[in-house]
Every structure is written in C-alpha cells, then in structure tokens.
Image 1 (cartoon, helix red, strand yellow):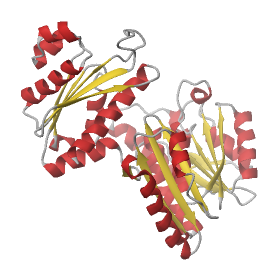
Image 2 (image 1 turned 60 degrees about the vertical axis):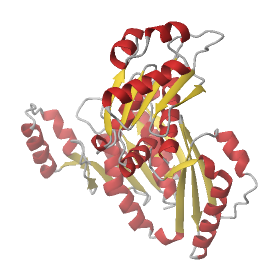
Image 3 (image 1 turned 30 degrees about the horizontal axis):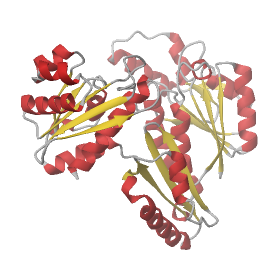
Length: 410
C-alpha cells in the first residue's frame, strides 16, 4: 500500500462555496507516513460522477480515502453508490441505529426515518467510529484487493476519525514505521520560492523528499526519508543541515501553531497578555483563545475600531489621533499601553491598520499595519505592509503580531 488517492464529494466543493481543507489535511498525514498521494479528485453530489471517480481512484491507487455524503439527506449518496460500485447490497447495522436514536433522544432532537441511512453500510465493511458526529465511516476491500475508506465530510469529525482510527490502521497495515523518518519545520519570514532557493545547495539522495506547504499566512517544510536503519542517520544529517540554512526562520515543528507556542511561552514566564485590536477586529484574540487553557495567561481584549472607542476604552489622547491619525506608530503604542494599563497584564499589544479594500492613500496604502507592544523591558512599535485582499491583510497582521510576541517572549 504505497499509492493513495483522496476523493472529496459535495456540490459545495466544486462550486467554490466551501474550500476543501479535508484533502490537504489527509494528504499531509499520508505523506508523513510515507505514502505517495498520486491524485486528489473532487466531484459533486452525483452518482455517475462518483462512480467515475471511484473507478479511477482504485485504478491508480492501492488506498482510496473519501470524505462527504454520509448524512441522512437526499443528496448524501456515498454509501449507496459505493455499494453499487462494489456490487454489494447495503445492510442495516442495528447497533448503530440504536446508538443514533439514543443520541437524538439525549439531545432532544426529533428522530426521523431518513436517519437510518447513516446505519446502512456495504456488506462486509468495517465501521469507523465518529466520536464527533452521528455518521460513522467505513473501510472495505474492493474486488481488486484495494482498500476503500470513507469518512465524514465535516472537518472536525474527519480529523478525529483519521487520528483515532485511520492513521493507526495504516501504520499497522504497512508495518514500515521503522523505515520512515519525518519532521516538519514551521517557518515565518520566507516565501515558498525563497525557501526553495535557500535549500538548493542541499543534495537529496534517493528516498528523500522535501514537501513545501504554503497555507497563507503559514509556511511549512516537511522532510521525509524512506529506507532501512541507515536512513535514520541520513535523516538526522539532513535535518541538521536544513536547520543550519533556515534556523532564524523556524518558529516551531510538527502541528504546532503560533498561538500554541505563544501561549506556552507566556505560561512558562508567568506573564499575562492583553490585546487592543482595530483593523484585525478581534482575530488575534480569536486565535489566542482557540488554545485550551488560555485563561492561564490571557486577560482581556478590546476591539476598538472607532476613534471614540480608542479614546474611551484605552485612554488614547484625542490630540494624538488628530495629529498623527489612527494608523500610526504613536496610536499603536498608546493602544498597547492603554490595554496593558487597564488590564494589569504583563504585556499589551495594540494593532491598527488599513485592511482595505478602501481607506488607503499614497502615504498610507492599503495593507499598512502598525503594531505596538508594551512590556516590562520597554515599549516598541513596528510597521508592516501586507498584500492582498482584506482577509489576507488581517491574516498577515495576526501572524506578524503572534510571531513578534514569540520573539519578545524568547
């Protein structure tokens, strides 16, 4: 089982209403285990197109992992279509049906007969539990002795099913854990092309793969080495060499996020944080509070979009706003000092800028962001310039703020 195909279904994916994050997540996890992802197929809620995708998937891969279409509604066609593709009937799993009924009752939700669709599976399928949702997945052999796995299309449900059931099964099935070494570098301050250029002098022997993943505003680099016991030494040597080239730009490894790293650093120092956000609209606070246990170090946040809010809530001086304007070094610093003073936090951060698409000028173009930091070592400000639409400016500003927090805490 060396080649994998990922199959995503749903009209919302091919119309562009929903971004397919499932495929990138699954591909990342499979590559880390040494599988080659040879294709990612996306089709709408259409039986004939799904049959086409299944046929092509098993032709070019030994493992096909699909997502979506396991729900109770009329457009949830997956299970029935897979059974038809395999030439099998659907069978009702009464234990799953009873569990579904109990779950609905415990939540006070009405039970309808169409929910039984989620308890019917192709004959001979092994069920994959869904800890986060109602619809289990399944794993089954095809007639050509390929493996077909189907998971929920809801990202949080799919991730749990992958972590708890699918990935451990793949490891056991392939029995090559000792032959694969892998690590992931999380990077800030480099573009994908610049990173590639920096690493060009490194020769990669056979069995070694460097995978770049740019998911704005994040960038990661994965090193994977296949082989016998001697590959471990090769892996360690290459990892050290890569670190020599890009160490100043590495902020973490594995699946760590900047908000998790910042939170752990705050906890270790015994410091607390407060945020004053204008152009980012609370997005940095959202990232900080998405980490469990953040109440240990996160005090408060203020979204101060208007000048009046900056004055009333943070004590920003009206005369300073009139003299320098809301997007300036002076106001970013006053915001940081104000939120630190009001909250009693160890560290205050203020962010003000022009997210666009309007509001810019030749002197202050769209994408200009000032960040102020008030901390025990002294107060400081930095100016950043981001490209792209409003969402990208906000994302870029949040990443810059968190990365600066990380370096300050270090």
